[in-house]
Image 1: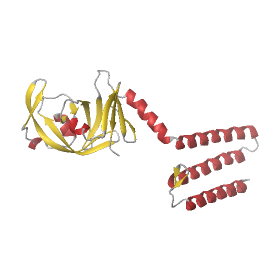
Image 2 (image 1 turned 180 degrees about the vertical axis):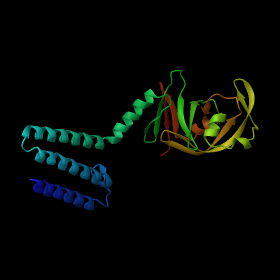
Image 3 (image 1 turned 45 degrees about the vertical axis):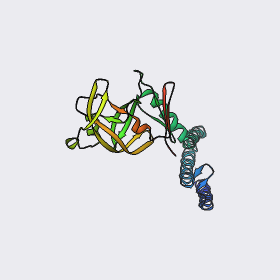
Image 4 (image 1 turned 90 degrees about the vertical axis):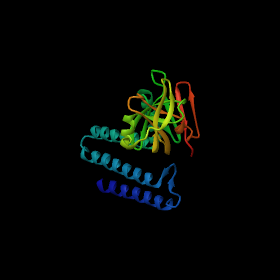
Length: 233
């Protein structure tokens, strides 16, 4: 029986190899890429082998053997189903986490959605020059504005900054340092060479995601309790 199983597996893998060779130039096998199809074929072959081996080991107890085989079939089906719909499952996971974690972005292609926080504002988890920087959406700010702590997290040279730009705030006029950030990312959206300002120590509690970032996008809007950002293709 083991030799029969081995031959079936070899035939199945040979057929999969033939399909891969035939579809190599196309790069896809149905909805899957050739790499994904090859990976899936190997996983299915492994599951069949393990399930069949269990049947051989417990051949004296047919009921127990069938139970083990059924478990392996269910596991294989669940893995295949999860593998097929992995992108949809990831989108669902991102949406759930975006609702539970303030500022977390749910990304679908070039579209990013962020749920409104409990305080009514949109807290946005960003990465600036690779460093993690929490911000608050501020459409009244002409530029992205970073606190001293955020600038440090972004790896900016605080000791050489020149606070020569006059800015208007709710508390009156103050000065800030003009910089150009290598990158700002929100979810799957990444914008590079973004103009920004660095607030003086003690002048700002939370960094602001202003128009120098938003104007780089194809569009942005607030739909009810969700901020929707759309990047260019």
